Structure formats: C-alpha cells, structure tokens
Length: 198
Image 1 (cartoon, rainbow, N blue to C red):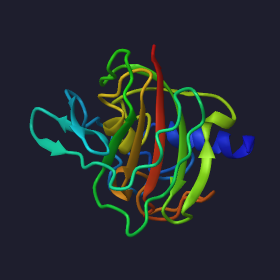
Image 2 (image 1 turned 90 degrees about the vertical axis):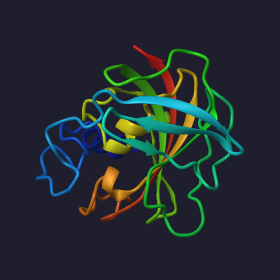
Image 3 (image 1 turned 30 degrees about the vertical axis):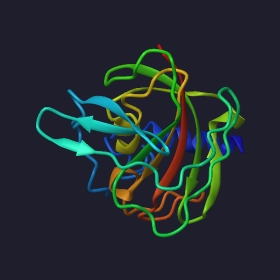
C-alpha cells in the first residue's frame, strides 16, 4: 500500500496543470499547460437536496458544477469515509457535492491546503487508494500542482468539510493510463476532506 501511495503522490503533485502523468513521463493530456487557468476563480455554494453544489466563476466565464447524482454516504467527520462509484455511465463534466459542510475558512486559489482523500475509478468501480492509510496530502490550490479537477473542485470548501468530486478525464489524467487502477480516459471519484488551510 505504501508503494502505491508514493506513486500516487508523484502523480497528484506533478508540476503540469492537469497532471497528465508522473513527472518522469511525457504528458499527452490535452489539458496539460504551463499556465494556471483558475487564477481569479471564486466559488459560491447553493443548497441542494443531496448536499451543497459548487458554482465556480472566473472573470471570463461562468461554469456551473453539477451535483453528484448519487452521492456516497456522508459518514462522520474525522473518520475514513465510505466511497462508492455511482451506477451508470460516468458524467462528462465535473460534479461536486458537499457531504459535510465545514465551519472553518473557505479555500481559495493560492491557499496551501491539507486534505485527506479516498479515490475510486469508474474503470474499476472500487476504491484504489486512500491517504487515510498513510498521511494527509498538502498542496497549493489553483497552481497546477494537482489535477484540474482538484484545482477547480476544492475551491470553496470550508476547513472541516467533506466533498465528493467526480472528475471527467479532461480534468483528470486524460487519455494515458496511469496504472494501479487508473485507465486511459478514466473518470475519477474522490472524497476529499479539507483538514486545514495552512
């Protein structure tokens, strides 16, 4: 499990926006660039019957993020969540639902955040990794240190909150298989707990 964790952190923290692969692999994802598209992004939340949906706005465009259609159980804050891949075909756009709304500060681009996460994929229909099994993960939000789905999907979370994200390939790892349960053009399902904004 530790070996998988080390590989994943290398993938999650690759320096190219969109995280098309490990830092030692060439990037072939159409989403990989050297600029950050989320500069100036703000987030607002609106109530939903299944949790809270996130709407992300940039100065040049507005992108509504759909709610997760069949969210996982919320679980209990501070404990490893149970994550399930929704039935049916994967969505083609980012989906986001707050299962537990935090009470701390709101995460914004440029913040150094520490999270716990669980990852499942549509290709395996099961959990393939969890930071809960080793240690929390820290990154700078909106700087291309993680996949675009995280840079966009974590914005607006409050510290202490838990959010489910379903990330399409265009905002994930793209057309190249990443091994260890991540197929080419895979849709990723994350449960992210925002522990703190450093």
